[in-house]
Length: 347
Image: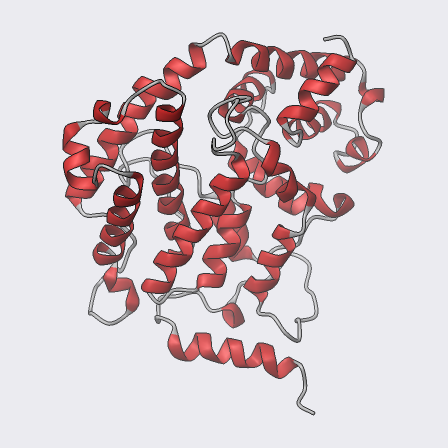
C-alpha cells in the first residue's frame, strides 16, 4: 500500500514538470504565518481553496448584493455568483497559459469574502463612518487572517493572501497607472478576470432592470468585444490569453506579464466608463439605495453606542476595539440579516 503523501507529491511533481517556469509552484510557496504539517492528498493551494469554500463567509456571499439591491428577479448576479464567474474565468486563463490553476482558483474564491451587505453602497457608508477607512479587499484578507474559524483565521498561504489583498483595482485606466501590483501572475489573472466578469454581468443585469438596452452600449466596444454576453466574454478571454502568451515560457520575453491588447483594453475601458456613467452612478442616486445606506449607518451608530449587542466573540477577536468590532460585524452581514436586525432594533 503506497503512502498517501505520494498523492500530494505526485501533484507537486506535475507542477514542477509541466507548468510554466513563471508559474507559482505550491512546493515553493512562501508558506503560512503559522506553520502546519503538509496534507497527504492536497497541495498547499488546493488546501487553501477548500478552506475558503467551507468557511462561513463564503456561504454568506449568496445573500449579498453585487450591484442591484433586493432585485425582484431570480437571475440577477449576487456576490456569490460573481465570485464563481471570476473563478471560472481565471481557471480558464490560467490553464491556457500553463499557470497554476489551483492558485488562481483559491484567489478567485476568496477575493470578495469581506464584501459588505448591499454591495458597494454598504462599502461606501462604512468607509465614510469608520475613520481609518474601509476597503473590501482589506476586509477580505482580515476575514481570512483573523475573523474566520472563531478568531483563528484560515491561515492561508502567502500567495493566496497576496492575491486577495491586491485584486482591487483603481477606477482609472485598465492596466494603467494606479492599477496596482500583485505578487504572482496567477493573482494578475484573477485581477483581470474580476474585470471581465463584472463589466459583462453588470451589462446583463442593467438590461434586465430596464436601465439600458443592448444598443446603448458604445458602438466601438460592440465592434471589438461583440454584441452578446457570450461573445464579449469569449473575445476578452481570448485576447488576454493571446496577449499574455509569453508567460507560458514557450517564447522568449524579457518581462512576461498578464495583459490585454491595446485595442481590447480601449474597448473594455470604454464599456467600463459607460457602466459607471449610465448604471453605477445613476443606481447610487436612486431612492432604492437610500434605505440600504440608512440601514448600514443606523446599525453602525447604534452598535457603537450599545456594544453589548455585539456577538460576544467580536470584541474578544478585536481586542476590545469596539468600533473595529462593529465594522467587522456589519461587513459580515448579508443584506437580509442587516435588514432584519435593523427592523428588530427599530432603526
